[in-house]
Amino acid sequence: MTTSHQKSSFVFSLLRKLLVKLKTVLVTLILMFLFPGIFLLVSIPFGLFRYTFHKLTTWWEPSVGKIVSLRGTVFAIDTLYTQPKASVVIGLIFQGPIDLTLLKKRVRLNLLKRTLPNGELQYPELKQYLNKRMGYYFWKNDPTFDLSRHVMTHKSKLSTYSDSDIKEIYEQLIHKPWEVNRPLWDMRIVSNFYPKGSGITKAHSVIFIRYHHALSDGYSMLRLLSEGLTEQEKVPVNATPSFSGRDWVKSLIFWVTFPLVGLWELAEFEVGNTEPVPFTPERKIQRGRFHVGVTDKILVNKVKEIKNNFGVGFGSVVYSACAGALRDIMIAKGMEVPYQIPCGTILPLPDHPQKLRNYM
Image (tube, rainbow, N blue to C red):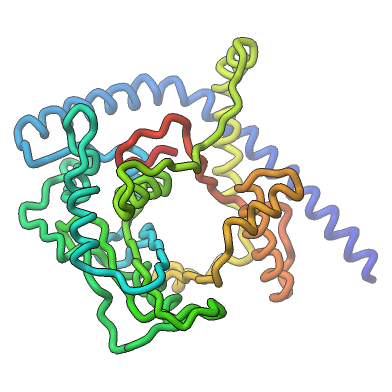
């Protein structure tokens, strides 16, 4: 009985994979037929209109800044002011107390007033909010900007904080809606934190940095925090993306095959999205509050130790841990572990600009 069931499951799984590949081939052929027309009749005209509209808007109204990049727009369409799903929260732990006045001073001098060699502000978006015009998002100056709205002490009835309290704050901030017409970032100081197993009786402090992904990617924020929260004039950011170069032969092959390979991968991803995912929540849950899991601290050195032991990349260890956790959950729930799960992966691009950007 068991052997027969296993054979039928194997045949069904094989037929399903073949069906997915067949659908991918058909979608790729359709995209190959449509792509030239879409590029010539849609992409180029809309690109020219976007550029012209951007220039006219900033000329007509100087308080309007840069237009949000296409990558940033992906996050800007979030339900910012009701149920944001693209907020990012970072927690920095320090020994001893943190002076709010000193923190504001560093943010003001090191970030708000920081300039590039050409004299332009490096992070003007810190004093700007999202403004939508004719379907496009712009950064617009906040005329009533007040640093005290963005750098503050965390309000709570607790006098001391444990690890579980810190995790709860993480989740609260992730779900917290953003204020309308206000910059999409803030910092909060939590004092009297006693981390578990620290072996230190002296109280710690935590600075929670919350920002929306429309404002910045992780690499930009890493640079911003390194420059803004330290006394050094310039802090090197060691987490530089590394890319293997191509010789002229590989470059030629890449650009010749790119149209077909790119359309194939796009079709494969879209077809994969139509396949049922075993752990997809019910619709009523998807429409409401989404779930966030906050784990215990995972040391970067531990990840590096694993990557060096197996001779793989840092990201490979992180992705493997996520995939393994999902697999364990499905097995514990008695679910069938699928052959693959469609998902998107964020990868950095080389030569990241020094401004706040989603460059990936």
